[in-house]
Length: 429
Image 1 (cartoon, rainbow, N blue to C red):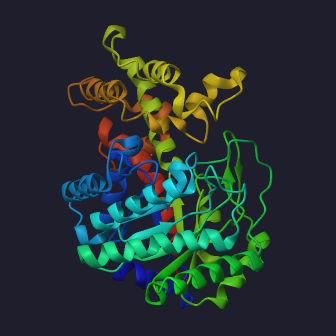
Image 2: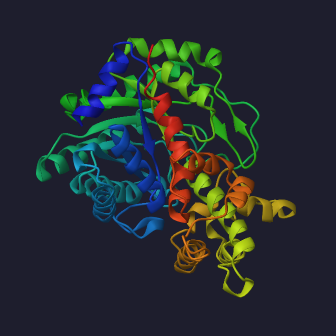
């Protein structure tokens, strides 16, 4: 926590520094982030979302304590000291239970937050912006803040009971919903400075009413909309000039930085500009798992060339078969049958990420890597095919920076994205 607070303090003192929040539970993504942290000496922030990890297992099947152990064990394997790994909880609140009445959803949210903090998560994003079944369509700031403060009180009790460092908090939410927009986007409304101020003041007042003035001093971040988003096929890029008023408005709150969600697929230049604009916490989720899928697909095309047909993993077709047979993670998003095959594989919202833990798909991925590592006596993939399908990894292998093995190549596809974020968060001059 000291390292995170130091980043915030340095940023507010005028340095263009920040931190990347990796929102993924995939082991290859985690390994890429943890190994990059080991090699760069940087703090690694891993966050779990409320639908991904919760008291009922989420879509990963992991509870908060399970996820904590999972990440820390992988940090041990990567050779990264545990004190350089920070775990956060994202969108903690009634997000998963919006179909229930508020009383029930908030009771489950209290258990959720208690479990996260008790398990050792110390960066807590409190998000009660979503309406429940008996709520009005749009909740007023005062009610959103009151519910967030209620959950902060739970977090404070859990911390004092379990010990360790005090948690820090992030409040506010972005528009649209987490995970990318369902509809096509051309332009986004940047959060107005007066709306940002109202959000901060509503939460500060709500914390005070709960007797949480000391905890309010540990609110370090505010989620707003800087004008970045992606839909299935397009990206809305950050335009610093459109966020200039929002950037200046944070000066009224010396202890806060902005947290930018949905920064996936932004250019390196846009990421650096976001950090300079006081978006010191950059979240990425689908962007890293998309890089994972992209690399797996390329490896599967190489497999088609070097492995006999009867022995191939058939990764691409098996993934599509499972997704079509179990559509619950994409059917509300991909509604155009004319481009369904394209969206299932290549949509930027990357609904494939919900399927990597499926037993059949997991085994197929393992078979792909085994096939490729066994495709030549030395386990190396043909340079000609790497140049054709994975030119970035080809260049790194030729330069001696990357081992020519399927596992190393796969991880490097994700590391490329992690490195772009790291560079944006460590600007000099």
